[in-house]
Image (cartoon, rainbow, N blue to C red):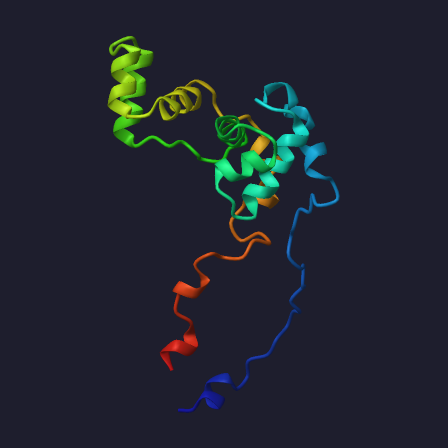
Length: 165
């Protein structure tokens, strides 16, 4: 039996409707405008936050992006955290130390000694006591989302189908 024998007598009775791809496009609204509702809760001004996000999305480190936005590196990290970007410098064990400090089971000096760096400790405490702002990640979604206009930094390290042939 051949494929033509199997397909004999099969007919299409309805047409498929092409509905296209559903997409939400917020690019008409600039980042500053999208961040305005969060202005009071950000650790810096909205314009600086927009510049920080733009530079960080280009691939700069948190510190470099903060400096180019006119902010201290810690303020830049706090801002990115509030916008929903995971930038905590702490390991899981160090987060446990912060938990113990906040529960008053470990004194501050001991917590800093266990973490190893006072700036990392301060940022870890801030991240633990300040949740990301609800809706803020959606405001910067097009910039910080994987697969946005930013090139993949690991593209040269990956194999291509042509490499297999």
